[in-house]
Length: 102
Figure 1 (tube, helix red, strand yellow):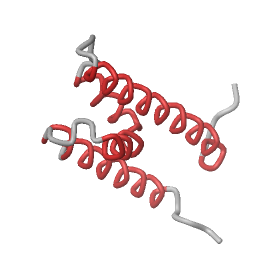
Figure 2 (cartoon, rainbow, N blue to C red):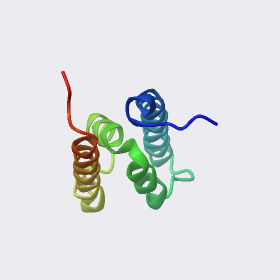
Figure 3 (tube, one colour):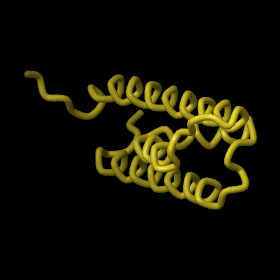
Figure 4 (cartoon, rainbow, N blue to C red):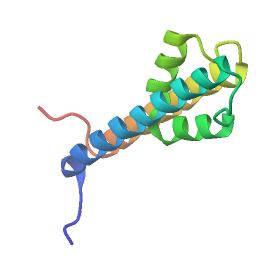
């Protein structure tokens, strides 16, 4: 099995982030739809888990766009914090790999 290193992983990471972002958007839209109809809701921990798994940017943007969960501090503070941690981790990983080489 070939070992994935450095730039060889970038396409896989990009596909993963696209898929997890689509999942984040789907769950957020599904929860908003259910909330309006007083139906079964997506659990808050599920939304936060999808955010923590990489869907934080997409979830934050869709929440703001559709005004869903914007009155909940758990989401309006928690998701930006998750996003900041993810960006910091990505930056540290990038620096450890030697930064951007032209």
